[in-house]
Image 1 (cartoon, rainbow, N blue to C red):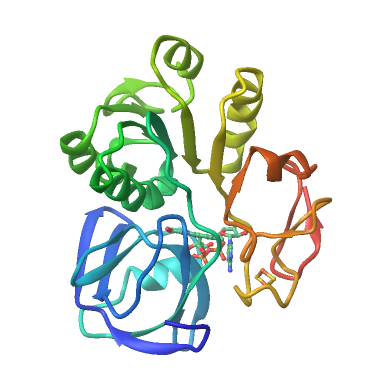
Image 2: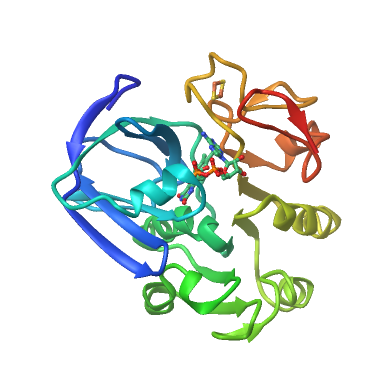
Length: 260
Ligand SMILES: Cc1cc2nc3c(=O)[nH]c(=O)nc-3n(C[C@H](O)[C@H](O)[C@H](O)COP(=O)(O)OP(=O)(O)OC[C@H]3O[C@@H](n4cnc5c(N)ncnc54)[C@H](O)[C@@H]3O)c2cc1C
Ligand code: FES
């Protein structure tokens, strides 16, 4: 694919639970774990989404209902044509003995990452969490693939509590040499000092309001680093994050204004 928008029919839709679904498109391009595509719903908007899986035949994008765009996606039907452009951004790198931490819809890019680590014969385990059981993506697939710890805020599946609740104990008791994380920014705020203190290398797959997706508009810049998340991210490592002063505090809204 490229940065030119082309439309493709939705091949299949799988509903994981209320307001959480995966759309499948024919595989017409390669994508690396952590990269994203821009999805265009004609007449509504265009938004960035991680690819959650790629096989020989299809690519999968997993979407949670939130505001106007993602709600409209919940009304889409198989056969409907959506615009896709990408893939964009810097992907994850590969590491053995890794812990993959996913919070909420942030679990989506960990699925394609886990598939790739598995194909490479690397050791890894999952640590995933969501507000409640029906907001948890792929728990059964992940359990079949690797050791998987599950947390829900309300205790409806796995252990009750935040996904990071036992992280220090896990890091101190297991052979973990690399941490990947994707999810809400508050999760990174909790994880970063814990990982830095242990000098564990890591990569976080981050989100910022994006528009062009190709580094032109400046909408997704992380202050003070000058990092354009759509080009130099969305996957950032511990060295990139040293330059970012606004983690968990400031982001840009749709107009580009910095808000707390
Ligand atoms: C790299 C990247 C990967 C993403 N991957 C996924 C994914 O796999 N699954 C998923 O459900 N969502 C993903 N998102 C979020 C998605 O792009 C939308 O933000 C989300 O669907 C909400 O949009 P909305 O219009 O429905 O809601 P709105 O009410 O418009 O926005 C809800 C929230 O999403 C943020 N948001 C809105 N528009 C954008 C935008 N253009 N870019 C970034 N953030 C925006 C807003 O700041 C707000 O916090 C990803 C975002 C980025 C940047
Ligand atoms: S979205 Fe335009 S520079 Fe990143």
